[in-house]
Image 1: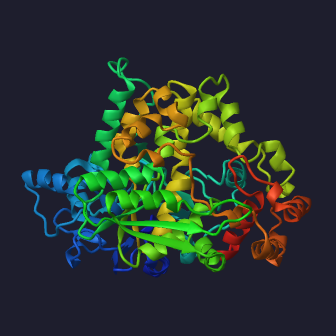
Image 2 (image 1 turned 60 degrees about the vertical axis):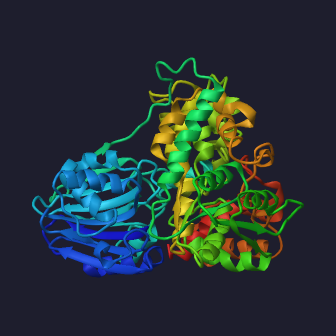
Image 3 (image 1 turned 45 degrees about the vertical axis):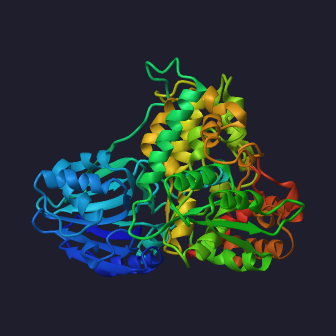
Length: 591
């Protein structure tokens, strides 16, 4: 896991290595183990390295292969690199390192852009072909690894984070009104190519983009799994699907153990992380390191799920680390948590993952985590009501959106209101596209390919990489996801959601973690804002910067500040936290 940066000129002038160096400084937490910069005429690549596979300097980046005429800067992990290496060696390729970076170089030379279709893993990379001068950008199927870019005057800059691009300078930092609409309505999800800033964009998941030396580019999406039934599967029972899911998940978990350092697990105590621990134990992992976090309760809402994580740790004999965060520590860590966000993210999970990652990184460099199971196996509460929907767009918006267009118009200042219902239009385009058989399939496709990328996946990447910790997500193994997309919705909706996954889990973990109310990363202090937290957000929203920006109507802010607890979104979020988080993020990054 690492951070990448680049400056690409399309006018024949020399690349700006100082800009690349500035971006690398911001990306340093993502790669604390090494740094490199390679310039070749109009193109410069930078890299910050976290040593996970091939700990020697032979795997340092940017990696240049003069014989093949390629230069690569890469962030991520290719789990099946040993198999690909063996295949490439059979074709006559010679290797000087033992990691996955060089495998990408040889694979690109051997198979061209089609190499990404052979990769099992998470990745974002840029690769320069010395002979043609073309630069190819690529991002993994679920966008687990980020890739931001900023287009300038005959120039392109790329980086693993938005703040890194800001550090390089010359960025249009005005707010994108459509993105602001997404943030406020689509639960802070701003899908690619947009970001909250007009001058920064991001490459969509499962996308390849090839730039010619003059700046012209071509782009293609290389993965779009159908969410519909396959011929020959109609007679499969719940038990049949259960067995297929368990086999595929076992393979996904096993793949993500490839490393030259120990691999642990973030254990919330829910079914998703618990089954990962159970499968690793079945694989023979002794003294597996597991980590859980909890917070003080507020407004009568409990702030931890230690009872379940303790049960799993005891059942499988893990080396368990239980981290409790008092309110005073939570308050002190909020500014750094917000600063670590590549984009403003409203979920309370951010502070949990940030503090958990801080502690975990003291003892280990790689963990597996359970993100993605809800979006792949239908674990959220809005899926069952869609089963009989005759208006999937309207019903999804009603169940998921924080507010509708008319309500938003009463909350945003007129100057910042998008002219159209940007969020509903975006969701409608995805939900009504071909390739999904039922309303539930349509919602699962939207959530797994859009919402997941710019909420849970981005959150985990940002918060773990802030501490140089690599997080691997087996539920987003693309073969497992392809299988799940074909399962009839009724098997996924069973048992209150994730039915087929719960049936698989029963073969691995104690039933107590399965037959319980769905949990989440509870941080009650940020949901029921009071005391010093209320003072903090009042100061932020009343600051000169916030007043001059004028994003929100004054009467709306007054209403929120007068009674924060009464204004909770349909997804159990605080409206006051949502608006103040945005302003805090903008101020943190000098926007």
